[in-house]
Amino acid sequence: MPDASQPQELPVRLLTDPEMINACRARDFTRIFQLVKVRAGIYPSMIARRCELTPSRVGEVMAGRRQLQHMDLIERISDGLRIPGDMLGLARRPWETPHALAVTEREAPQAPEPQQQTPTSLPGPDVDSILALATRTNLSTATLEAFRSSIEDYWRRDDQHGGEALRPAIVGQLRYVVGLLKESRPPSIQNGLYGIAAELARLTGWTYFDARQYNQARAYFTEALQLAKEIDDRQFMANVLACMSLQATYQDKPADSLALVTAAQDQARSSLGTTPRVLSMLSMREAFAHASLGNQTSTHQAIGEAHRQFEQIRASDPDPSWVSYFDELKLIVDTGIAHGRLGEAATAEPLITDALRRENGTNHRGRAFHAFWLARTQLDQGKVDQACTTATQALESASAVASERVSGHLREFYDQLAPHRREPVALAFEARLRAVLPPVSGSLHP
Image (cartoon, rainbow, N blue to C red; front, side):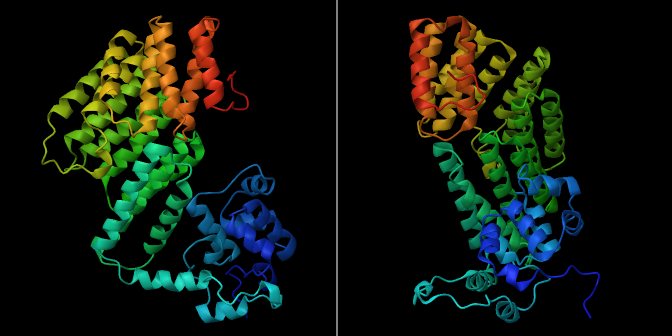
């Protein structure tokens, strides 16, 4: 007699239906919930109860008004509806039947037509799972270094081209590493995996943040925090909180930004190994938050603390790899941006100009972002010709990278040009803006 306390498995005919298979592969939960309702008789209220979701959320998903992308939610749906893990790109779930039985039980009732059969078919998900298990038995420090190397490569390519095209690969690797965490391993390997998963989650959050998809970004940043907390990596938790603080600044939530960066500093100071470079970066994020609030004195104090900490950096410091980007040029340009956010354009302009002159040309997003801030400080001082020339240079860098955050800044600059729209240099910038950046629905883009 079946255990009434356990969710019943879905009918085999539904799990083997091509429409269900395709919906699961795409993680189209609108279609999955609809199929489960129609084919298995599991109604929205029951879906909500089994998957630990609110009925209103299930209704929004079924109506196509909400997407579900967080790994925790996907795992709850897999477990609650008894959808095998490999159908949703997850590791094998604890409740699944032994592998041989599962294959026999879920085979399609009808044989494929002759023309669909190929003598050299690619390995299916079951073979992939077996190969993955074989890999998992031999994890070593070299494996962890390979993961870290791939993360460094993701960040480099993100700087050069933007993260949108990279995101599927990053999420796939995150999902794979999270799956590895469910197995018992030596503490050194397990802790390393947690750190790698946390960085992959932060990187995924960053790609969503750069695309101005803030809800998804926050979900992945939160996942990164949870993973780092498992190994008490307070420096990395501070790093994630600093990312969330920066996002709050972009969302015009300066009070939230300040609260988050304050929490980040608390985490960093509670860790014995926190380096001056990390503290300097966090003080600069604090300066951004104060500047957004219009707190002049506090902004200047935070800038001063950032420079004081930076002067204490030594070559022998055990800096985490994720803070290596915060070098002297970054300190200078961020100091300029903090002054620019505060409205101190005359102080900001020479700092950003100096940093741009010395920057490496491969970081297209960074150059576009910094050139925008230089153009803004020039415009704030009434230097319209210089500002438009600089903004046009920013456009050239922006054209090489997929970053809605940078594109949005340049559209904002166009809006700020409103009093000067008839001047030839402004018209030239407008024409170039039209050519490089496509208009966004609902924006003030020309």
